[in-house]
Length: 422
Image 1 (tube, rainbow, N blue to C red):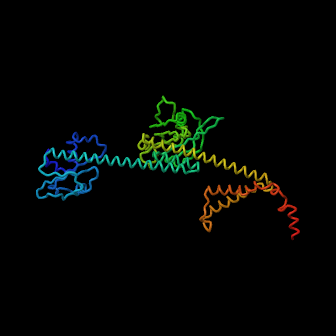
Image 2 (spheres, helix red, strand yellow):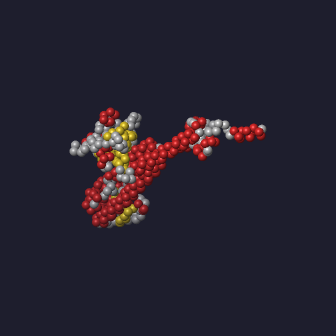
Image 3 (tube, rainbow, N blue to C red):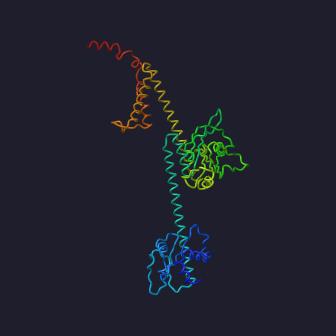
């Protein structure tokens, strides 16, 4: 291999010279161990062949990325300086005459440099991606913990789970405990990008090892199916194709995730369906499903496991919040009953005040113009107004019954005294 052949080929047949470099340095450079699937290119530039460079080659050399390095060769006695490319982009300088081992040594150093650069960028991008993932999980956690509406919370859990795993569809099951009839799973929610207008009705199902959700509930284990239609026959669970047949849908990859509370007890199951290569793809046919749907991997398990734990805690906190609300609601009703029993003549008064006050606030909410157009009462505000209306006579609890139940505004003696004064 002559040096002149290399230098001439660079300017007239770029692909050929890269092929030659790879062919002659494969064993020396250990290119098979390089992580990237892209070419790592060494550009050999000899300034005595500068006139042979075409526009494409000039542009390529002018903007080399992390996969390219330049070895500049000063081959002309009268052209000792580099006029072809920026000095900052040159990895190695050589001067004619050059021995073959020197050239190969420079090429090997260049490939090692490119490999190290690529690995650094690969590691940086990986760290950056994981940082964004953690940030996303933190953001999701804060969103879930701040949502007090139970139905909205469940919708958030499922939508965020599908978002981080890039799934076309998903379902949410919640455990319903009942000592009399036995525990059951409530099919609480379903989402599907392909079947956007899907109508859903909540229903319950028994907890058995034959269903996917039941199996996960009983075992507390993940269930990862590469193809729901190809479940081995030696396992307890099976896939129910009723939904697919009814809506002409094709379920392929599935991930069943147990949601566990602080006692490590499964309180629900996340069912993620059809992980996609591209988020925007609609799985309109079986062929699209085959081309676009991919299995769930280990990395997905870590993400969804963390999210499922956050979801379980959020559900538990939300149920606790609801129980506190119910407890306070019971206190308010008991207080109103006590007031009305002490003063029967005003029975129903507190309820009427509450209904009218909340009704007026709702009318204001519907107003879009005038001095009330900018006023809006949230659901929390309306609840506070309702409680205020119900409890506005709470002070009567501390008033003597003789004062509350007297027939007239004044006692007889007070009325007689006032008459004398008049």
